Image (cartoon, rainbow, N blue to C red; front, side, top):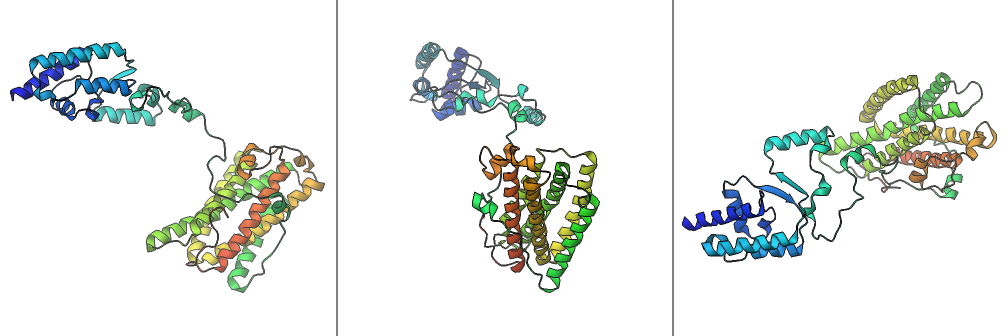
Length: 393
């Protein structure tokens, strides 16, 4: 009992000598110090955010060298404290931040402040120098402050799934093809696509008058908001089916998600040239709500119908972008032959720095031709057969 009391007194003398703080790093050097710090009633326990290197660890090691603290007599206690005080002061450690240990209420308060974006009232991770292994290594200044991270977003297309990168030969070799319907399901899918296209051409006014940049951008933006739905809905359905049946998916999900993201990137690229009106946005919201519901129910009933439907839809998309390329060459869109491609297109399709909008349309058409082949292939497979397309293919 007397030995324990003497040890606690020695530890308190150390804390008084070195200031109103406890030794955050001591548990890694001598476990006795840690047990005393936890068991004592000292109210000076704090985190020390300082530059700790091998030389400073040696100071702690000397102060905490055996025999253990609870076996030191009074004279040895004085020697240890004097030695520690002398070497501590000689180092002139830069105490960057002294902060009391947080209780549960303080932690909850700071979590709420972090969620609200109030980072100035909580510690900055770049100041926590005691996490560094050596004082010779400077804190990485490339890591942004949380406030900067909220304001400085990475460019569009930074985080994308694997997808094909087309060569010059591939984008110019795309042809308009058609798979002849076979059976009731194929014919129903084909007729449905033809009905949708005719209705859209009529209500969008695309059949009337001459085409121009405004009409093309409106058409591309609206169609891509619809084209991004099937892949995501189908992937979700197969994901839930895999969870429900506790069986593997046979590799379909990643291909469907890649398709959905690819269509979304087409939309984001077109939006660099035009911001839709409020009426346009309301039409997108309405059509999305209807189409998501219809396609989801249809996929539950017949996945084959849905993939065949998308296959025929992509056939029409290839026709649409081929017509756009004709307008670029000989129509009212000749300025797209020289208009620079948006930065997002350069990053996403790995285009040349001097790429133009014509190159972007060629890449988009190649994507649509790829989706055409993939969905016709998936429609011909049973839903429990293996997907032949690897990620990014």
